[in-house]
Image (cartoon, rainbow, N blue to C red; front, top):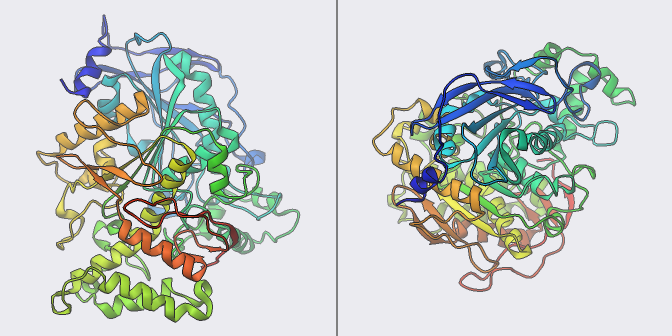
Length: 586
């Protein structure tokens, strides 16, 4: 019997009834509705429960204030409006009044007197877009409700509303992270009223949501709020997830809105309307034309995270079980325009005609203009560029005559993947394993559809696993294949095992933990397999480059001190402690 099936039997209800469930909470009663999962089990769905007061008027650009009790019974049958965003295609219906969570729970009572384990979901979207409605409740309930897991989906402020900062105590930033923290505190208070165990909470995110979980996992503020994390395609170690560049972006936006950089900056920004800010940001686009593609992101502010470095914070934080994951072709989501979300631009989303003509010369041009710059490498920029070109254009490559446009475009994709996702997450996994965290690694390689791009480039792009988990994101629009239900079941088994036990191993697959000497990982496909050291060819290259040139491209920081390598068996180099001196502005 599979772990998935066994989980169903463990939580068989005595009676199942359908209707309008109601729960009494410390803030008031909430009424939801029933949803019958594909297994036949019933989930109770509660949408749009406030966890903080609306961050509007005097509360705009302030830390969240916990929600007040409401009178009567809250009608929790509709998703809340998305948090305010600037990009027109995502801004329709968005609102600053958006700090709500949705809860999906089994209709039956747990046989464990402590209650059901709880999964908290934090959506991604470059801290610029996203909502709970985007991920729905049906597929995630199909996956986890039959296995006796409560799911909570939360929203948080985005863009300038969530991450505007003056770089000092006036407006330190990170409000989106504080929203997440406040939501998790509310889940702790609500847990027993929804039949959950507040001592078995797993926080999971993807992309910017994953980087948020990474931040939360080491924040002193959240040490006692949850017990486990799942981090999918995003780490606080990444250049786009921690940067003071957001200070410059914020102050330029303020100046364009006639809010000067004075002691009255916050007051001026509070007096603007949502439309004032949105209108001024028109034309910015979704991604910044920079290796740090996020216009607004978290930063080290000495408040949300008091430690001086992520490495120090990892050592000081609770040693929580951690599951870290990537897709095996992350940046195919950005390198090709075919996905249709955003138009072609200077760095990302290459148009069809450019892919048709992509060449070594184009790859070299990109590396010298956007990666090996004088701002990063100083007088050694040309030398560093030569090494990066040699590695990504020539290393482990077929003879030159066999290298066509798709070969070089694929290498361009791998270059972006290694900088934005793979290297930061491997570094976090190794640092956490060395500090004593039970750490596990997964790589999602299942390719749902060739519709990602018309070209023969194999691999699962960024967000591909979201179809299996939520039936959301762009991949949900593709025709379902006969293998999709199989991969959904495999994902549900592995993730539910981790949520319930802190170990992703199932009855049919043992997944070893990461050690300071080795990264075993589960390759998630139709036939899951245990492999070793994902993406290490590129990871070790960037580690060597950082040590040689004193600049870490993947985190956007200068490095002045190194620790001894963590990997000593099979692999000779590993992560080092980064002493962050300055954040690059490029």
